[in-house]
Image 1 (cartoon, rainbow, N blue to C red):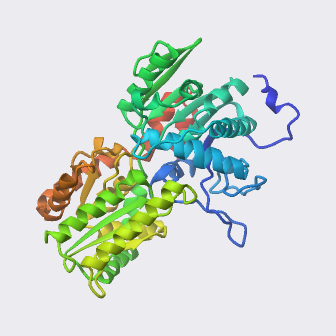
Image 2: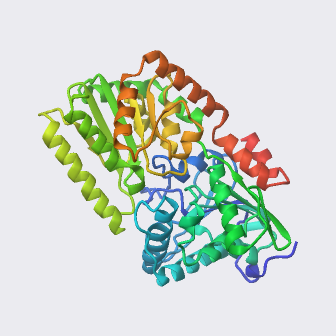
Image 3: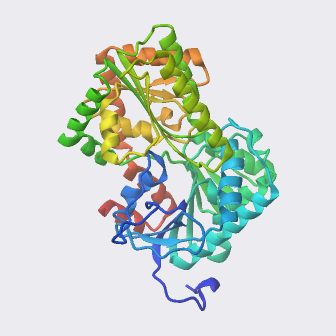
Length: 483
Protein backbone atom coordinates (compact mmCIF):
# COMPACT_ATOMS: atom_id res chain seq x y z
CA UNK A 1 0.00 0.00 0.00
CA UNK A 2 1.33 3.43 -0.91
CA UNK A 3 2.56 5.70 1.84
CA UNK A 4 0.14 8.52 2.57
CA UNK A 5 1.35 11.86 1.17
CA UNK A 6 1.45 13.39 4.64
CA UNK A 7 4.13 10.92 5.71
CA UNK A 8 6.58 11.71 2.90
CA UNK A 9 9.58 13.56 4.30
CA UNK A 10 8.47 13.03 7.90
CA UNK A 11 11.09 11.84 10.40
CA UNK A 12 10.87 8.16 11.25
CA UNK A 13 8.51 7.42 14.12
CA UNK A 14 6.91 4.39 15.67
CA UNK A 15 3.57 3.53 14.16
CA UNK A 16 0.71 1.42 15.49
CA UNK A 17 -1.96 -0.87 14.09
CA UNK A 18 -4.44 0.47 16.71
CA UNK A 19 -4.68 4.20 17.36
CA UNK A 20 -7.07 5.70 19.89
CA UNK A 21 -7.81 9.39 19.33
CA UNK A 22 -9.34 11.39 22.17
CA UNK A 23 -9.34 14.96 23.35
CA UNK A 24 -7.20 14.15 26.41
CA UNK A 25 -4.35 11.77 26.98
CA UNK A 26 -5.18 9.29 29.75
CA UNK A 27 -2.45 10.43 32.12
CA UNK A 28 -2.08 12.48 35.25
CA UNK A 29 -1.55 16.19 34.77
CA UNK A 30 1.95 16.18 36.27
CA UNK A 31 4.69 13.61 35.95
CA UNK A 32 6.28 12.08 39.03
CA UNK A 33 9.78 13.11 40.04
CA UNK A 34 11.23 10.07 38.26
CA UNK A 35 9.49 11.08 35.03
CA UNK A 36 6.95 8.27 35.22
CA UNK A 37 3.36 8.78 34.12
CA UNK A 38 0.28 7.06 35.44
CA UNK A 39 -3.21 6.58 34.07
CA UNK A 40 -5.59 9.32 35.09
CA UNK A 41 -8.68 7.53 36.40
CA UNK A 42 -11.61 9.81 37.12
CA UNK A 43 -14.99 8.48 38.29
CA UNK A 44 -16.50 6.89 35.20
CA UNK A 45 -15.64 8.33 31.82
CA UNK A 46 -13.55 7.47 28.80
CA UNK A 47 -10.29 6.51 30.52
CA UNK A 48 -11.98 4.04 32.86
CA UNK A 49 -13.67 2.45 29.85
CA UNK A 50 -10.60 2.04 27.66
CA UNK A 51 -7.84 1.46 30.22
CA UNK A 52 -8.44 -2.30 30.67
CA UNK A 53 -8.47 -2.87 26.91
CA UNK A 54 -5.31 -0.95 26.06
CA UNK A 55 -3.22 -2.49 28.85
CA UNK A 56 -3.26 -5.69 26.80
CA UNK A 57 -3.31 -4.33 23.25
CA UNK A 58 -0.22 -2.44 21.97
CA UNK A 59 -1.53 0.89 20.76
CA UNK A 60 -0.91 4.60 20.41
CA UNK A 61 -3.13 7.17 22.13
CA UNK A 62 -3.31 10.56 20.39
CA UNK A 63 -4.47 13.41 22.59
CA UNK A 64 -3.81 16.64 24.42
CA UNK A 65 -1.58 16.42 27.49
CA UNK A 66 -3.08 19.42 29.33
CA UNK A 67 -1.69 22.92 29.40
CA UNK A 68 -0.76 25.10 26.47
CA UNK A 69 2.38 25.50 24.39
CA UNK A 70 4.54 22.94 22.58
CA UNK A 71 3.48 19.30 22.80
CA UNK A 72 5.66 17.49 25.37
CA UNK A 73 7.34 14.17 24.66
CA UNK A 74 5.89 11.59 27.06
CA UNK A 75 6.97 8.05 27.93
CA UNK A 76 4.85 5.00 27.25
CA UNK A 77 2.28 4.16 29.92
CA UNK A 78 1.51 0.46 30.44
CA UNK A 79 2.94 -0.16 26.98
CA UNK A 80 0.64 2.41 25.33
CA UNK A 81 2.45 5.11 23.36
CA UNK A 82 1.44 8.67 24.18
CA UNK A 83 1.41 11.01 21.15
CA UNK A 84 0.66 14.56 22.18
CA UNK A 85 -1.23 17.23 20.24
CA UNK A 86 -0.42 20.83 21.16
CA UNK A 87 -3.15 23.33 21.99
CA UNK A 88 -2.72 27.07 22.34
CA UNK A 89 -4.56 29.21 24.84
CA UNK A 90 -6.93 30.30 22.06
CA UNK A 91 -7.55 26.64 21.14
CA UNK A 92 -8.38 25.79 24.72
CA UNK A 93 -10.76 28.72 25.07
CA UNK A 94 -12.53 28.49 21.72
CA UNK A 95 -12.42 24.77 20.86
CA UNK A 96 -12.64 23.01 24.22
CA UNK A 97 -14.37 25.52 26.50
CA UNK A 98 -16.24 27.10 23.61
CA UNK A 99 -17.62 24.96 20.79
CA UNK A 100 -17.23 21.56 22.46
CA UNK A 101 -18.52 22.41 25.92
CA UNK A 102 -20.65 25.53 25.52
CA UNK A 103 -22.23 24.68 22.14
CA UNK A 104 -22.28 20.92 21.59
CA UNK A 105 -22.46 19.69 25.20
CA UNK A 106 -25.69 21.49 26.15
CA UNK A 107 -27.41 20.58 22.87
CA UNK A 108 -26.42 16.93 23.28
CA UNK A 109 -27.82 16.97 26.83
CA UNK A 110 -31.33 18.20 26.04
CA UNK A 111 -30.35 21.90 26.25
CA UNK A 112 -30.42 21.79 30.06
CA UNK A 113 -28.40 25.00 29.72
CA UNK A 114 -28.75 27.34 26.74
CA UNK A 115 -26.08 26.63 24.09
CA UNK A 116 -23.96 29.50 22.80
CA UNK A 117 -22.93 30.04 19.18
CA UNK A 118 -19.84 31.99 18.11
CA UNK A 119 -18.16 31.82 14.71
CA UNK A 120 -14.65 31.93 16.12
CA UNK A 121 -15.47 28.84 18.19
CA UNK A 122 -16.33 26.94 15.03
CA UNK A 123 -13.10 28.11 13.39
CA UNK A 124 -11.14 26.76 16.37
CA UNK A 125 -13.07 23.48 16.34
CA UNK A 126 -12.11 22.94 12.69
CA UNK A 127 -8.50 23.93 13.33
CA UNK A 128 -8.03 21.59 16.28
CA UNK A 129 -9.79 18.69 14.58
CA UNK A 130 -7.46 19.12 11.58
CA UNK A 131 -4.46 19.02 13.92
CA UNK A 132 -5.70 15.79 15.53
CA UNK A 133 -6.32 14.22 12.13
CA UNK A 134 -2.81 15.06 10.94
CA UNK A 135 -1.25 13.72 14.14
CA UNK A 136 -3.21 10.48 13.76
CA UNK A 137 -2.18 10.10 10.13
CA UNK A 138 1.46 10.30 11.23
CA UNK A 139 1.33 7.47 13.77
CA UNK A 140 -1.05 5.00 12.11
CA UNK A 141 0.43 2.04 10.25
CA UNK A 142 -0.79 1.30 6.74
CA UNK A 143 -4.24 -0.22 7.06
CA UNK A 144 -4.41 0.47 10.79
CA UNK A 145 -7.57 0.63 12.84
CA UNK A 146 -8.24 4.11 14.27
CA UNK A 147 -10.80 4.62 17.02
CA UNK A 148 -11.87 8.27 17.37
CA UNK A 149 -13.63 9.16 20.60
CA UNK A 150 -16.41 11.59 21.41
CA UNK A 151 -17.92 14.95 20.60
CA UNK A 152 -14.73 17.03 20.76
CA UNK A 153 -13.48 15.38 17.55
CA UNK A 154 -16.50 14.85 15.32
CA UNK A 155 -14.73 16.22 12.24
CA UNK A 156 -11.69 13.96 12.61
CA UNK A 157 -13.10 10.88 10.79
CA UNK A 158 -13.80 12.85 7.63
CA UNK A 159 -10.53 14.79 7.76
CA UNK A 160 -8.56 11.62 8.44
CA UNK A 161 -10.17 9.75 5.58
CA UNK A 162 -9.06 12.50 3.22
CA UNK A 163 -5.48 12.15 4.49
CA UNK A 164 -5.36 8.35 4.88
CA UNK A 165 -8.01 6.48 2.88
CA UNK A 166 -6.21 3.23 3.71
CA UNK A 167 -7.26 3.35 7.37
CA UNK A 168 -10.18 1.58 9.02
CA UNK A 169 -11.85 4.38 11.00
CA UNK A 170 -14.27 4.03 13.86
CA UNK A 171 -16.03 6.80 15.76
CA UNK A 172 -17.73 6.36 19.13
CA UNK A 173 -19.90 8.97 20.81
CA UNK A 174 -19.90 8.58 24.59
CA UNK A 175 -22.52 11.26 25.23
CA UNK A 176 -26.16 11.20 24.08
CA UNK A 177 -26.95 12.14 20.50
CA UNK A 178 -29.89 14.54 20.46
CA UNK A 179 -33.20 14.33 18.62
CA UNK A 180 -33.35 16.15 15.27
CA UNK A 181 -35.19 19.20 16.60
CA UNK A 182 -32.28 20.00 18.95
CA UNK A 183 -29.43 19.13 16.57
CA UNK A 184 -31.00 21.27 13.85
CA UNK A 185 -30.23 24.36 15.95
CA UNK A 186 -26.52 23.99 15.11
CA UNK A 187 -25.42 26.42 12.39
CA UNK A 188 -22.79 23.88 11.21
CA UNK A 189 -24.98 20.79 11.40
CA UNK A 190 -24.16 19.51 7.90
CA UNK A 191 -20.39 19.77 8.43
CA UNK A 192 -20.61 17.88 11.73
CA UNK A 193 -22.63 15.07 10.17
CA UNK A 194 -20.24 14.78 7.22
CA UNK A 195 -17.29 14.66 9.61
CA UNK A 196 -18.78 11.71 11.49
CA UNK A 197 -19.64 9.97 8.21
CA UNK A 198 -15.94 9.78 7.42
CA UNK A 199 -15.91 6.74 9.72
CA UNK A 200 -16.60 3.17 8.66
CA UNK A 201 -18.53 2.53 11.87
CA UNK A 202 -20.28 5.09 14.09
CA UNK A 203 -21.13 3.79 17.54
CA UNK A 204 -23.62 5.24 20.02
CA UNK A 205 -24.62 4.31 23.54
CA UNK A 206 -28.28 3.65 22.73
CA UNK A 207 -30.29 2.57 19.71
CA UNK A 208 -32.37 5.77 19.92
CA UNK A 209 -29.21 7.81 19.28
CA UNK A 210 -28.45 5.82 16.12
CA UNK A 211 -32.05 6.43 15.01
CA UNK A 212 -31.69 10.18 15.65
CA UNK A 213 -28.49 10.24 13.59
CA UNK A 214 -30.09 8.33 10.72
CA UNK A 215 -33.03 10.74 10.64
CA UNK A 216 -30.70 13.75 10.54
CA UNK A 217 -28.54 12.35 7.75
CA UNK A 218 -31.66 11.82 5.66
CA UNK A 219 -33.09 15.25 6.48
CA UNK A 220 -29.94 17.40 6.28
CA UNK A 221 -27.74 15.56 3.75
CA UNK A 222 -30.49 13.74 1.81
CA UNK A 223 -28.59 10.45 1.99
CA UNK A 224 -30.33 7.07 1.97
CA UNK A 225 -30.13 5.77 5.53
CA UNK A 226 -31.52 3.19 7.92
CA UNK A 227 -30.83 2.79 11.62
CA UNK A 228 -27.98 0.43 10.67
CA UNK A 229 -26.47 1.64 7.39
CA UNK A 230 -25.92 4.88 5.50
CA UNK A 231 -24.79 5.08 1.87
CA UNK A 232 -22.07 7.73 1.44
CA UNK A 233 -20.66 8.08 -2.09
CA UNK A 234 -19.29 4.62 -2.89
CA UNK A 235 -19.06 3.54 0.78
CA UNK A 236 -21.46 2.03 3.27
CA UNK A 237 -21.17 3.49 6.77
CA UNK A 238 -22.51 1.30 9.53
CA UNK A 239 -24.12 2.71 12.67
CA UNK A 240 -25.37 1.05 15.82
CA UNK A 241 -25.61 0.93 19.60
CA UNK A 242 -22.64 -0.36 21.60
CA UNK A 243 -23.31 0.40 25.29
CA UNK A 244 -19.97 1.03 26.98
CA UNK A 245 -19.16 -0.84 30.18
CA UNK A 246 -16.48 -1.32 32.85
CA UNK A 247 -13.90 -3.88 33.91
CA UNK A 248 -16.33 -5.73 36.16
CA UNK A 249 -13.76 -8.27 37.33
CA UNK A 250 -11.25 -5.57 38.29
CA UNK A 251 -13.74 -3.55 40.33
CA UNK A 252 -15.17 -6.62 42.05
CA UNK A 253 -11.72 -7.86 42.96
CA UNK A 254 -10.71 -4.45 44.27
CA UNK A 255 -13.86 -4.10 46.37
CA UNK A 256 -13.34 -7.58 47.78
CA UNK A 257 -9.85 -6.90 49.12
CA UNK A 258 -9.62 -7.11 52.93
CA UNK A 259 -8.01 -3.67 53.16
CA UNK A 260 -10.85 -2.12 51.15
CA UNK A 261 -13.44 -3.80 53.37
CA UNK A 262 -11.57 -2.49 56.44
CA UNK A 263 -11.48 0.98 54.95
CA UNK A 264 -15.24 0.82 54.32
CA UNK A 265 -15.85 -0.05 57.96
CA UNK A 266 -13.70 2.87 59.13
CA UNK A 267 -15.49 5.25 56.75
CA UNK A 268 -18.86 4.18 58.08
CA UNK A 269 -17.64 4.74 61.62
CA UNK A 270 -16.30 8.18 60.65
CA UNK A 271 -19.75 9.01 59.23
CA UNK A 272 -21.26 8.31 62.66
CA UNK A 273 -22.31 4.70 61.98
CA UNK A 274 -25.64 5.76 60.43
CA UNK A 275 -28.48 3.35 59.77
CA UNK A 276 -28.43 4.45 56.13
CA UNK A 277 -25.70 6.01 53.99
CA UNK A 278 -26.56 7.59 50.63
CA UNK A 279 -23.71 8.23 48.17
CA UNK A 280 -23.47 10.25 44.97
CA UNK A 281 -20.29 10.54 42.89
CA UNK A 282 -20.39 13.05 40.05
CA UNK A 283 -18.36 15.46 38.03
CA UNK A 284 -19.48 18.99 38.83
CA UNK A 285 -21.78 19.36 35.83
CA UNK A 286 -25.27 20.78 35.34
CA UNK A 287 -26.34 17.56 33.57
CA UNK A 288 -25.74 15.44 36.69
CA UNK A 289 -28.82 16.58 38.58
CA UNK A 290 -26.89 17.51 41.73
CA UNK A 291 -29.10 20.48 42.60
CA UNK A 292 -32.31 18.48 42.13
CA UNK A 293 -30.93 15.69 44.33
CA UNK A 294 -29.98 18.11 47.10
CA UNK A 295 -33.42 19.72 46.93
CA UNK A 296 -35.14 16.32 47.23
CA UNK A 297 -32.97 15.34 50.21
CA UNK A 298 -33.58 18.70 51.87
CA UNK A 299 -37.34 18.26 51.61
CA UNK A 300 -37.15 14.73 53.03
CA UNK A 301 -35.27 16.17 56.02
CA UNK A 302 -37.71 19.06 56.38
CA UNK A 303 -40.73 16.76 56.48
CA UNK A 304 -39.10 14.29 58.87
CA UNK A 305 -38.99 11.38 56.43
CA UNK A 306 -35.25 11.03 57.11
CA UNK A 307 -33.29 12.23 60.13
CA UNK A 308 -29.68 13.34 60.27
CA UNK A 309 -28.86 11.04 63.17
CA UNK A 310 -30.05 8.01 61.17
CA UNK A 311 -29.26 8.88 57.54
CA UNK A 312 -26.30 10.64 55.96
CA UNK A 313 -25.67 11.83 52.40
CA UNK A 314 -22.14 11.82 50.99
CA UNK A 315 -21.91 13.99 47.86
CA UNK A 316 -18.66 13.74 45.91
CA UNK A 317 -18.58 16.46 43.25
CA UNK A 318 -15.23 16.48 41.43
CA UNK A 319 -14.50 19.91 39.87
CA UNK A 320 -14.84 20.02 36.10
CA UNK A 321 -14.29 22.66 33.38
CA UNK A 322 -13.70 25.28 36.01
CA UNK A 323 -12.85 27.97 33.47
CA UNK A 324 -16.31 27.70 31.88
CA UNK A 325 -18.62 30.29 33.40
CA UNK A 326 -21.66 27.99 33.67
CA UNK A 327 -19.64 25.55 35.77
CA UNK A 328 -18.36 28.24 38.12
CA UNK A 329 -21.94 29.39 38.69
CA UNK A 330 -23.09 25.82 39.28
CA UNK A 331 -20.37 25.15 41.84
CA UNK A 332 -21.30 28.31 43.73
CA UNK A 333 -24.98 27.32 43.76
CA UNK A 334 -24.25 23.78 44.93
CA UNK A 335 -21.95 24.97 47.71
CA UNK A 336 -24.53 27.50 48.90
CA UNK A 337 -27.22 24.82 48.98
CA UNK A 338 -25.01 22.38 50.88
CA UNK A 339 -24.22 25.12 53.39
CA UNK A 340 -27.90 25.98 53.77
CA UNK A 341 -28.92 22.35 54.34
CA UNK A 342 -26.11 21.73 56.83
CA UNK A 343 -26.91 24.97 58.63
CA UNK A 344 -30.59 24.16 58.90
CA UNK A 345 -30.53 20.43 59.63
CA UNK A 346 -27.02 19.54 60.78
CA UNK A 347 -25.73 19.32 64.32
CA UNK A 348 -22.31 19.66 65.88
CA UNK A 349 -20.35 16.69 64.60
CA UNK A 350 -23.35 15.56 62.50
CA UNK A 351 -23.58 17.35 59.15
CA UNK A 352 -26.57 16.47 57.04
CA UNK A 353 -24.37 16.30 53.94
CA UNK A 354 -20.70 15.36 53.71
CA UNK A 355 -19.62 17.37 50.66
CA UNK A 356 -16.30 16.41 49.05
CA UNK A 357 -14.74 17.93 45.96
CA UNK A 358 -11.43 16.06 45.72
CA UNK A 359 -10.94 13.10 43.36
CA UNK A 360 -10.55 9.66 44.95
CA UNK A 361 -8.24 6.83 43.99
CA UNK A 362 -9.80 3.55 42.92
CA UNK A 363 -9.46 1.81 46.28
CA UNK A 364 -11.03 4.69 48.20
CA UNK A 365 -13.85 4.85 45.67
CA UNK A 366 -14.47 1.11 46.04
CA UNK A 367 -14.61 1.54 49.82
CA UNK A 368 -17.16 4.35 49.44
CA UNK A 369 -19.26 2.13 47.18
CA UNK A 370 -19.26 -0.56 49.87
CA UNK A 371 -20.38 1.98 52.49
CA UNK A 372 -23.35 3.18 50.46
CA UNK A 373 -26.68 1.56 51.27
CA UNK A 374 -28.15 3.67 48.46
CA UNK A 375 -26.18 4.87 45.46
CA UNK A 376 -28.00 7.88 43.97
CA UNK A 377 -27.14 8.30 40.27
CA UNK A 378 -29.71 10.79 39.02
CA UNK A 379 -28.43 12.76 36.01
CA UNK A 380 -30.85 14.83 33.98
CA UNK A 381 -29.24 13.28 30.89
CA UNK A 382 -26.26 10.97 30.51
CA UNK A 383 -24.83 8.88 27.70
CA UNK A 384 -24.20 5.91 29.98
CA UNK A 385 -22.90 6.71 33.50
CA UNK A 386 -20.23 4.22 34.45
CA UNK A 387 -20.40 5.14 38.14
CA UNK A 388 -23.69 3.24 38.32
CA UNK A 389 -22.01 0.16 36.86
CA UNK A 390 -18.98 0.52 39.13
CA UNK A 391 -21.24 0.57 42.17
CA UNK A 392 -22.95 -2.64 41.11
CA UNK A 393 -19.62 -4.34 40.42
CA UNK A 394 -18.29 -3.25 43.83
CA UNK A 395 -21.21 -4.76 45.76
CA UNK A 396 -19.64 -8.18 46.18
CA UNK A 397 -21.99 -8.70 49.14
CA UNK A 398 -25.05 -8.39 46.83
CA UNK A 399 -26.29 -5.57 49.08
CA UNK A 400 -26.95 -1.95 48.23
CA UNK A 401 -29.72 -0.23 46.29
CA UNK A 402 -29.06 1.65 43.06
CA UNK A 403 -31.27 4.70 42.54
CA UNK A 404 -30.90 5.47 38.85
CA UNK A 405 -32.21 8.15 36.50
CA UNK A 406 -34.22 6.76 33.63
CA UNK A 407 -32.38 9.32 31.45
CA UNK A 408 -28.99 7.66 32.00
CA UNK A 409 -27.96 5.17 29.34
CA UNK A 410 -27.32 2.61 32.08
CA UNK A 411 -31.07 2.48 32.83
CA UNK A 412 -31.67 0.45 29.66
CA UNK A 413 -29.29 -2.24 30.93
CA UNK A 414 -30.09 -2.13 34.64
CA UNK A 415 -33.90 -2.16 34.87
CA UNK A 416 -33.66 -3.74 38.33
CA UNK A 417 -32.43 -0.41 39.72
CA UNK A 418 -34.89 1.92 41.44
CA UNK A 419 -35.60 4.08 38.39
CA UNK A 420 -36.65 7.71 38.81
CA UNK A 421 -37.34 10.81 36.75
CA UNK A 422 -34.93 13.41 38.22
CA UNK A 423 -37.01 16.25 36.79
CA UNK A 424 -39.91 15.12 39.00
CA UNK A 425 -39.02 16.27 42.52
CA UNK A 426 -41.81 14.30 44.19
CA UNK A 427 -40.92 11.19 42.20
CA UNK A 428 -37.25 11.62 43.13
CA UNK A 429 -38.15 11.88 46.82
CA UNK A 430 -40.34 8.78 46.63
CA UNK A 431 -37.59 6.90 44.83
CA UNK A 432 -35.10 7.75 47.55
CA UNK A 433 -37.51 6.60 50.23
CA UNK A 434 -38.28 3.40 48.34
CA UNK A 435 -34.58 2.58 48.09
CA UNK A 436 -33.96 3.43 51.75
CA UNK A 437 -36.93 1.38 53.00
CA UNK A 438 -36.69 -1.55 50.59
CA UNK A 439 -36.90 -5.09 51.89
CA UNK A 440 -33.34 -6.50 52.09
CA UNK A 441 -34.38 -9.60 50.15
CA UNK A 442 -35.67 -7.42 47.31
CA UNK A 443 -32.47 -5.37 47.35
CA UNK A 444 -30.34 -8.54 47.11
CA UNK A 445 -32.42 -9.97 44.27
CA UNK A 446 -32.13 -6.75 42.27
CA UNK A 447 -28.39 -6.47 42.90
CA UNK A 448 -27.70 -10.10 41.94
CA UNK A 449 -29.53 -9.62 38.64
CA UNK A 450 -27.58 -6.44 37.84
CA UNK A 451 -24.26 -8.04 38.77
CA UNK A 452 -25.00 -11.02 36.53
CA UNK A 453 -25.69 -8.67 33.62
CA UNK A 454 -22.41 -6.82 34.15
CA UNK A 455 -20.42 -10.05 34.31
CA UNK A 456 -21.67 -10.88 30.81
CA UNK A 457 -21.53 -7.32 29.46
CA UNK A 458 -18.20 -5.98 30.68
CA UNK A 459 -15.62 -3.76 29.02
CA UNK A 460 -14.15 -6.58 26.97
CA UNK A 461 -17.56 -7.59 25.66
CA UNK A 462 -18.09 -3.96 24.61
CA UNK A 463 -14.71 -3.82 22.86
CA UNK A 464 -15.23 -7.19 21.17
CA UNK A 465 -18.64 -6.10 19.93
CA UNK A 466 -17.39 -2.81 18.54
CA UNK A 467 -14.05 -3.98 17.12
CA UNK A 468 -15.47 -7.13 15.53
CA UNK A 469 -17.91 -4.89 13.68
CA UNK A 470 -15.23 -2.34 12.72
CA UNK A 471 -12.20 -4.56 12.07
CA UNK A 472 -13.35 -7.11 9.55
CA UNK A 473 -9.93 -8.78 9.44
CA UNK A 474 -10.37 -9.88 13.06
CA UNK A 475 -6.71 -9.24 13.96
CA UNK A 476 -7.41 -6.74 16.73
CA UNK A 477 -10.15 -8.91 18.17
CA UNK A 478 -7.73 -11.83 18.36
CA UNK A 479 -5.21 -9.73 20.31
CA UNK A 480 -7.92 -8.51 22.63
CA UNK A 481 -9.10 -12.05 23.34
CA UNK A 482 -5.53 -13.16 24.04
CA UNK A 483 -5.19 -10.20 26.47
